[in-house]
Image (tube, rainbow, N blue to C red; front, side):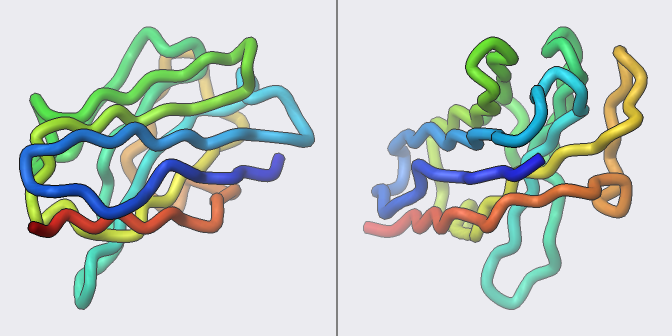
Amino acid sequence: VQLQASGGGLVQPGGSLRLSCAASGRALSNYALGWFRQGPGKERELVAIINKNGRFTDYGDPVKGRFTVSRDNAKNTLYLQMTNLKPEDTAVYYCAAKTNAILSGLYYNQADYGYWGQGTQVTVSS
């Protein structure tokens, strides 16, 4: 599967953005999915994860209550709705897909994901 992330940009603190990750090559319903990010001078970290049918989600502590992950398997697309953005959310955001996932599975380890998008830059600044 090939993943293409989009929707990043420059936004003021308190603003919102929606990231998308479009898949091609295979049906996205075959994969558990995740969003990860890497800020300047930081290691890549988990942002949000979602199971194969979208029923189960989880989030990294820094974004809980502000970000929402969702997926539309019919459109082969993963989303990340980001609200109340903060300067510390500035990062390159990556979408990732894990094959051989169980239906209800949530996968927290980046090493579990075999497919990655190219990343989209989000900059939060006034």
